[in-house]
Image 1 (spheres, rainbow, N blue to C red):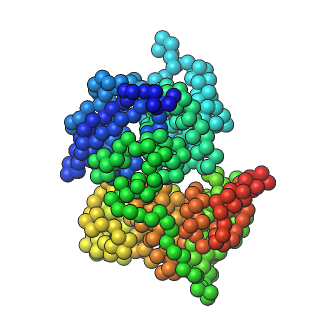
Image 2 (image 1 turned 180 degrees about the horizontal axis):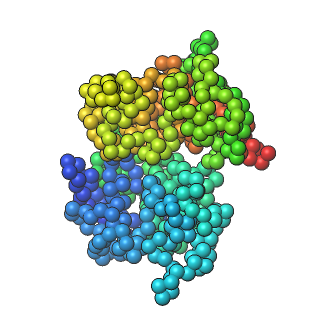
Image 3 (image 1 turned 135 degrees about the horizontal axis):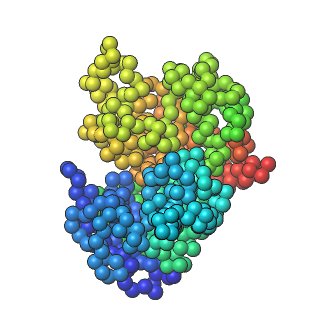
Length: 506
């Protein structure tokens, strides 16, 4: 349904204010959403996007302002009232119940029943239809959600949103953990929903996606609407970046200096294999070199770096740091050898969410700040602050609880942890996932500066452009095998995709 055919917005938010202790998260935000459009909500981490969608989904009650539905005032008492109104939300941080099946998660809270008895056969049939619509008929409705990959869990979350037959669907970073083929499927679904009159509120840090899928844009900065009713077709990316950050940013990668010819090999991976995950992976990384690993979700990229770090045990193969073998399946041995890992799921795997930033930075170096089992907080704070200064985290953040920081600053803090540890090898798994455009540029600079200082860097990224723009050398994986390794200079995204497709077909 074309948006121009609709005069009255389906949904209106006017002068919405939401305050938390010491922070005004929303300060008079406006948003208009029309039926049959993709309305993109942009802003840096901390701009107020998450708070706004939680107000709209009924999770938060605004302090003031109003929400209107087809021109009539709408009062949301909680998430269930939002769903009943026709508002469904797919959160970036998935809220599935791991111990329940796919079907139970999809219809959780609105179970299919007759006279109080569940209708399992009907539920399974409906879930299969939703999964087929999403292009994933292979997902078993009876399987426990905890056994699915992160990407498959995202698909289940989308199936749950479809089950509500919503008129407004909020998608918060829906493509962050999907491979290119799955993203294409997501966009096909969005276009189908548009044609049926559903309004999509789409949040993404990937500006190229906005250009592909969006109709109109609202931009938030510091809890205020700084751009509204912007047509995607008429708004250059440079203007969007300036609205989000308050300054012009060249969305480009830092210059790659030449690696010294005599740079020594720091990391050697030889014949590494794990059944059903990856096979016979071998590569080396020199001091000051960035090696990027590209491939689709499920190609084995994350599994390789986790095995190199000892978080998974290799079936066969060896890992050496500066010529010395690292004990297989031991994170402690990897850290002692000089390795650090920034994992893909930083909140679940890397952060102590209710601890201050400085404690998260110092956690890998506690023996430096402890005597007879007691930690010297002041020494830890001073040391952590030096590393946070080095990566240009704003002063005053070091004592904050880390769960309150933006995704970009959380990622910088994990990097600072390994700077403090003095690591020789840094493994980065999706280092800019869920990070806004300003913080992304900062992280690129930090990675490049680490390499210049002599650290050997291995980086996994789903964004081929990121691998080609930042890495000196690329490893391309498909179906658990290395199908290409070589310099990134002169290589295009199309070249890499062709390599992946040929590897998948082999």
